[in-house]
Amino acid sequence: MTEQQTLPALLLESCRHWGSKPALWHRVKREFQPVTYDELLRRVHGTAAGLATCGVKAGTKVAVMSENCLEWALVDWAALSMGAVVVPLYPTLMPAQIAYILKDSGATVAFAGDLKLAKRMEEAVQEEGLETLVIVMGGNPDGHLSLNRILEDGKSTAFSMDTWREGCRLVRPDDLATIIYTSGTTGEPKGAMLTHRALTFVCYAVTAALPIDQNDRFLSFLPLSHVYERTAGHFLPISCGAEIYYAQSLRTLMQDIISARPTVMLTVPRFLDSVRNKITSAAEDSPGFKKRLFHALLKRGRDRLKNDFRPVGMFGGLLDRLVGRRVRERFGGELRFFASGGAALPPDLAEFYGAFGILILQGYGLTETSAVVSINHPARSRYDSVGEVVRGVEVRIADDGEILTRGPAIMTGYHSKPEETKEALDEEGWFHTGDIGRMEGKRLWITDRKKDIIVLANGKNVAPAGVEACLKSSHYIEEALVIGDGMEYIAALIVPMFESLKRFCQEQGLDASHQGEMIEYPEVKELFRQEVHKANATIPDYERVKRHCLVPERWTQQTGELTPTLKVKRAVIHGKYAGLIASLQ
Image (cartoon, rainbow, N blue to C red; front, side):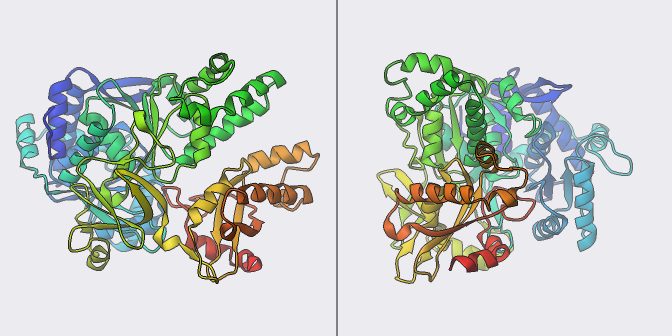
């Protein structure tokens, strides 16, 4: 297929080429129903006609705040086809954060996934006195303008298919397509401005780097408001004629996976870890013989990865049929690979899934790079690396170890933030990622975030991500945050994996009804002392955790410790747990 350099041109070409083939699948009365490429084209045109009745035109900023759904896709494609600029917002954001993004971006039209989100959006609009029209995407709620209403209004206009197609051709490659706000682990969010050229470049660069085509099925469950899902799970599949299934909710996700039978799934390590814990818990509760079979196969994970995922050892094939096949069926039975991004992939996670013949391809990218810098290829994957730099992207390592990159996918800058833009993009066009890493040939490794490096009192530098990953390899540790700046040693805050800890307490005959009480038992403190000791055995002496304390509650988006992309907000945790941290110094 001919490479297109704008998103509307990409959509038109794919719909022309794939026609009656299913493009999108969404739940209708509990069943997945298809939307063909032909129908997608018609519905995007209809949505564009509706948007026109709301004053949307080239340059208009259109915000979208919703869970993933068919309507999200239609509004996005329609706005982009008109030359409008789409501003996605996480549906977990609070009114103050919504108000900041709407005001900073200049969004004059905003779509909310349901009435609850619309009211939150309207609260933000009223607080800032903004002139933003809020439209509800789901249903026809009284007193609110709905997507259904503007679609009806659009039918009575002269906005014909030919008129719309002509408008699509007016969009230029270097026109601004979207402003995506970083999740803000430090300071206020920054709006990365991405062009049509940047996003279409990524589509073709990834399909050149990975065996993805019209035979693939993607399951969309990561937030479309994040650059990763939007680029690689929304634009990319349409560019190559693949199919996208929309998960109904996180609650129904595992059933949605079985129904959709995806061949490719975008994921993040936190999801993989959560599923691993459920699989392990189910195995632990199984009869003795089944449990022994599970652990026998699990021990072969690293060897199976080295053997191109073929079963290894005596009875390897039998174990795979009895255990491995059942685990693969949890993911629909046809999954070719997970593509993992958003955070570092712990090696033990790759080895766990590898034991059951499930491939995880780790990649690397940022909002500012349109989601992709590098990706592993199935035939030459190294799960300890973030893969090979994709064609057309340049990467070099600065003298201080920082990863610099440039190419067509780099943002044009941060919206309304010239000083921050100047810090991130140098005069030669290199984007300074803030990540520390190394390269061998085209293969890239990430070792830490530049700003997170800990400097001990003796002058030694410690990359906290590596230490934290070692701690989190324990089945009893869900989260860890390492501290040590100006100290003589490394210490850590540890969030237990409370499901596993509850089982341990029950086995010890201890009351497991209260998390705060569980972490105070001498037996539990000894358990975590041993888990920290195991982690320390794998890292250099000066990086070893000398002191630690347990935190009595999980870290979540709702309680403020995690960003919408599930990254730890170090500054928030340092403030919230200042007393505990002081006790470790």
